[in-house]
Length: 112
Length: 116
Image (cartoon, rainbow over all chains, first blue to last red; front, side):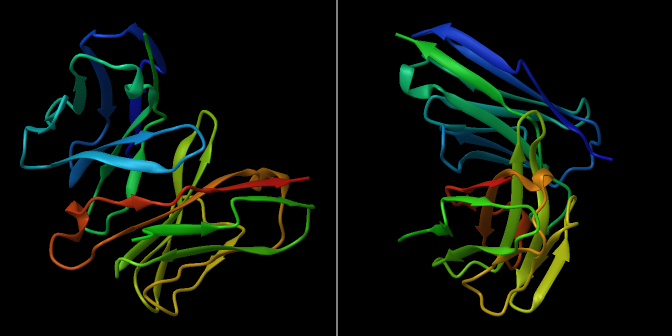
């Protein structure tokens, strides 16, 4: 059974720091991996999607990498800002159906 | 575009009551899903649909029913509410077709449900 784990569960950093969020999965036979952002009381917003044949994706200050063989993904946030404060979730898809298996999330606080 | 719209936003039920959580999307997406989010458990898939008239079970389907009569709507029915169904429920949609699994998913803002 595929399991997705995110460490740490919570992270607090001062504004301007570069930071890395970690995601690991137990079965390397994934279709893709996605990173989402969730603000309090809101739904999820898709940030980056890495297909199984890709190694990384970038969007602005965000860079996500994927290493299928080791079952790991990282989300790198450059020059963090207070507006980046949110919960970040990673999820894997096992097939073309779009069904997602989520990690429990990392709650990030960026202090001014 | 409204995207994915969920109603109601909040609901309190008594044990044994039934209700329907509504989900509608205006993006002509073929794939729709229901997840529940619980503290310490992450999001777990309840039911999903790859098109009108087609539904299937996810990881935690017991106690829930779904139907997909139109592309736009995917309601989730609680048959007899139990305290264990207290949760935040999210509906999601994405495009189907070739490469459907690589389409980004769009989520609604959720329905916060409490069962007393």
